[in-house]
Amino acid sequence: MPRSIRASGWGHSMAETYGRELRRAGADANSPVRRLVLLLRRYPLGAAGAFILTVFVLAAIFADAITWLDPLRTNAPEKLMVPGGKHWFGSDVMGRDIYSRIVFGARISLAVSLGATTLGSVLGVAVGLASGYLGGTFDLCVQRVMDVLQALPLLVLALVTSAALGPSLTNTVIAIAIPMIPASARVIRSNTLALREAAFIEAAQVQGMSEWRIAIRHILPNTVAPLIVLATAQLGSAILTEASLSFLGLGIPEPAPSWGRMLSESAAEYMRTAPWLVIFPGAAISLMVFGTNLLGDALRDILDPRQRG
Amino acid sequence: MSGYLLRRVGLMLLTLFGISIIIFVLLRLVPGNMVDILFDSAGMVDPAEKTRIAAELGLDKSIPEQYLVWMNGLVHGDLGYSYVSEKPTIEEILPRIPVTGRLALSAIGFAVLLGVPFGVISAVRQNSGVDYGLRVLSLAGLSIPSFWLGLMVLMAFSALTGRLPVYTEAPATVLDAVLLVAVPAMTVGFRSSALIMRLTRSAMLEVLRQDYVRTARAKGAGAGRVNFHHALRNALLPVITVIGLETAFLIGGLIVTETVFNIPGLARFLVESIRNRDYPIVQNLVMLTAFIVVSINFAVDLLYAALDPRIRLGA
Image (tube, rainbow over the protein chains, first blue to last red):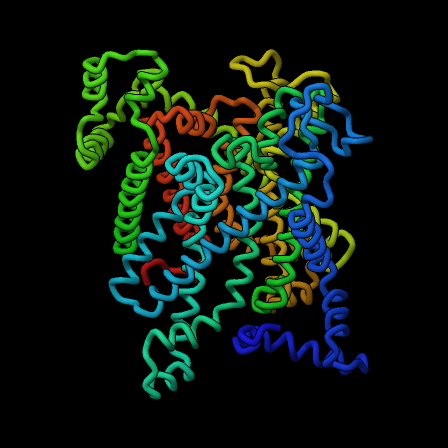
């Protein structure tokens, strides 16, 4: 467990519970392997989620090694091939291999969703920390701006931003990150407000520590756990938003193999004659989001015992 | 109470004002001048004509001036003209409202009818096989993109019946009319139903541990009466909040679903207008969306206070 989470107090009940369970089982509580086995047994769905995500991450990293056809190369004689043989998942109307496109598509999906979630969280943390710590008029103004960003559905704001910036990978990341700022800013702000009154912050102030040092060294590490929970939830919605934007033609431009784009190109036209064009990209999106949701639920249970359902 | 209402209405107006500025500026960032785009598509080259059209559309004015013209129009009910169809914006938007409204209401209805009972079952049978199955199913509901679900439903529909439920103005039979709304509504509502189920479950679990539920059981009330009369009524409060918050997500679902099912509603129109850079339509539609979201959140707050006597607004 990272030191910062342990220090936050969020992890205490988990450590205690495990300690008790491990002692009861007569196990060596310090063995990392035993701890991992216990964690897997206690959160099988979370472990399944982590496994699914790991498979996608590995596929994205080693995409060149596990595919044998160029995802961008068109091959007219082999268009709309049925899945099997050379084309595991079939081929599209331009003869491009669907399996290669799905594997390389994992790179795009992960790059956009991880990029957008990280950017949104970093900006959200900065805004939330400043807002909660400084308070006053600054906080009031920032909160109204957050109200504004939250009054528009994520997809609508992302659509307009994406259209304004023009279609590209970086712009898609920005378009998805902006609507995500308010959620993390609000979580960090409310945590900061609660922590500001804590005795250890007062102690730091008495010692003469500067406000910024207190905010970064003491308050920020204590908000890591809820931030991880939120970021995992946002990762899933970032994947879905990227897919929707690309599906609507306002996300990742051609010829990059984006899963959402693959669905919009061929889906309606070849739905009856070549259903594999619809089935595989959609299954890839759903499975990846399913993995993040499973993992997110388990992380929430582990890191935030108050929300256990 | 009236002080609270005034403050809330003030905040709503402030939020809408903020949105109007953000949207207006964002749309002016779009690369390429609108007149150039119109010219390119029409194949015209006369520069004098270009200046005339720019002046006619008000595009020769500065951005703050253009904003003031728009706001002045909004206040007086004049939303400008569509660049594409050249019809008044209001005439483009109004006929599409019932199409999307019907779809949205059916989707919410479907989500509640499916989500609440399954949430109760899941909570009452906590940690059973049924509970596990329903939880995995609800997580799947949150993971499947609604446009893919829509495409899969269309595919299954055409495989089973040999035809596609494509939108028409005048459906031939009553069954057709019901299917044309029900199939897309279920596609959009599935996600919301998953969320409602998860929330009903956790709210029910909390309520079922309360003393008054134990008292009701001790008095000999039947399981059905305890679960639905005593527990569900109290568990529904947080669920109502989520149904309110879900509207924002539902609009996202409508955008893709209307596109998949080719439904001529507001959500698909928004995407088309963004693609066509039809600013007057986009900015007014986005304002309408924001107005709906903000008003529903307001209504949910009031409803919450009306249903829960412990909450006194503005106290």
